Amino acid sequence: MSIATYTIQDWLFDRAQGRFEIDLAESGVQYQLLSDLPLESGWDLDYSLDRGTPELRGRIAALYAETDVPPDADHRAVIVTHGAQEALYLLYRSTLAAGDHVITTAPGWQQAWEVPAHIGCEVSVLDWRPGSPFDADALASAVRPNTRMLILNSPGNPSGQTLTSTEWDAILRVAGSHDLLVVNDEEYLLDFGASVVRRHPRAVSVSGLSKVYGMPALRVGWARGPEDVIERMVNYKRYTTVSNSVVWERAAARVIADRDRHIARYRSLVAPGLQQLETFAREHEAHLQLVGPHGTPFAWVRFTSVPVSSQQFAEQLLDQQRTLVMPAEVFGAENGIRISYARPADVLAEGLRRVSAQLAAVV
Image (tube, rainbow, N blue to C red; front, side):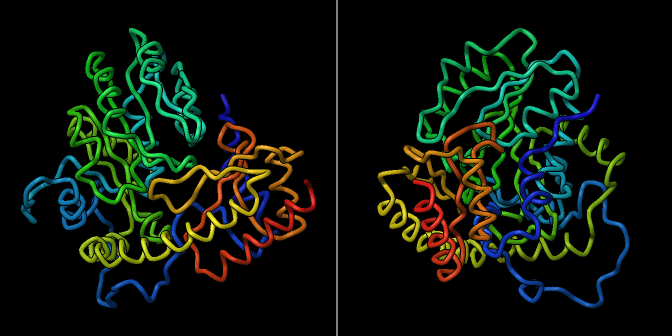
């Protein structure tokens, strides 16, 4: 059975390629350069380990730890993967079976419902609209005797929303009472002391260096979770990518060691970028509404009186203004676009000027 077209990637990597000058679609902070990495010419080009180098796994484990983590420990609760998406894929493939039931949310990442469905799982997709609270009662009602996994994304993509402590408490009461494995995509989480793995014993955190660090080309992601779950993921990885690049894993360990500097860079782009986006939204409040993001480098912009679909608008923006945004339709929603604003000020200003021009052309 063939799997559904991955609409997010199809839009970014196929339909839009070669058609844009300004990218307000890619969901991470403005990318960094190879010269920003601490590389050494003497590094060997051997294989890495299937679960990742001990140094990198130790750095990752330390992000989640309440106390100091021994650098020479065997951190078997961590696996390093080829980006966060591989971590999620390995998790679904190694943990779920046909007939299991999975709960996730939309708008969201298509992988969260398509891959479990492709395995043969039953999938319930809860409606968690940008700007709305999470409905824990709907979650409780969706649980079945065969429910095995709850897949969340907080801070959320594309909504920019973050679950509150009260919402987490309600969610984890449901999960705990039904012995669900709770998975949270935490690519945009800055403080891993607030990770789901610190809140719930049967939880998996997935993250990486693509979004906050601006280093998607490294393809370094990870999962941190129960050792039995991680071991199944390691074994499945042996059938797929085997291991990551040892060069990029060594570089990644140094990046995480210098994490404060990279987080400062992230914040230096997010804060002024959001101010620009808020000004843009005020200027167009008759036709759209900005859903205030919670620390993400992108925001959801809801269409309130735009006489074309968000997919049509994004296509026209691409064709007539050579500017790329993400339409709601690729996330399983309607009437909105996701705009990434953690860009250099001049790039963002020109991109928003072009979005304004396209709005003027259609309203």
